[in-house]
Length: 290
Image 1 (cartoon, rainbow, N blue to C red):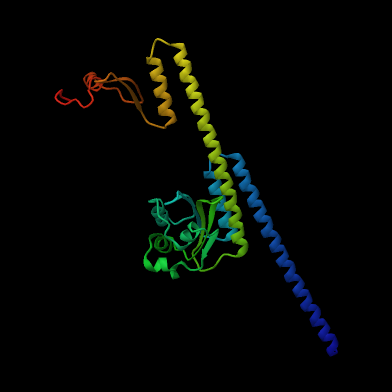
Image 2 (image 1 turned 120 degrees about the horizontal axis):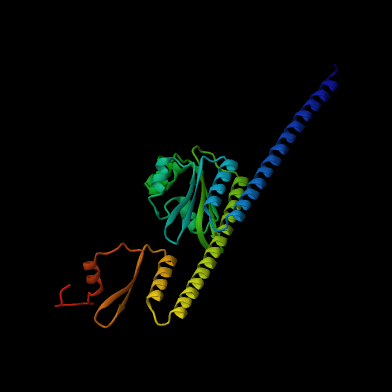
């Protein structure tokens, strides 16, 4: 075979190899895009199925993010303006979970400080090389020593300018996350913010409706027994303890000298002598004996 034919054959073989490689890359990109779209659709389905309960949503987001971003574990933190609280974890080593649930924690890691300071996301390639870890800051130390964290990525959960929390995923080897994985996590974080806002609005609407209903029911009792205050006191106390999530409550009247308990709700039965003592105890009764 002459040299020209050999050269042409080698070029064709190389072209064929390149085409197969490009085809494999296109298939991989297609599969990744399909997986991301499927995960997003599944998360939206969870939001629609349980708009007021955020636990299933947080679990779904963590599971999808860990799988698609090839992370060892993940956690979702809320932020109240001062402290960080972990509200969901997935795959976190038990010792690190125990540390996290001892919270709340002040922002201590470089990622948390960066996001609290306004960054939309932050990534640490190797946690053990950070100043926070070397200085012994609690969260970086616990993450690395108890959780085995080396590379981590945090994305803000932000509504307008208010930081609601941080969504973090972690690797136990030094391997930074790609731009595509960062974008995916930001998309999941945006879905979480929408769900948190929806949940807040639903809860506020439900609470307002419950309060209005309770008020209407108490007014109904007042109208049905205008001369008898006992049912009114009982109804008021029952509604108050339920709406305020209190285990028990007491309602007392004051005659200028003594308090008299006229209604109790959720309390254990008292002995007769103890009951009289409660009903007849004066306010600031010096010299009367108490």
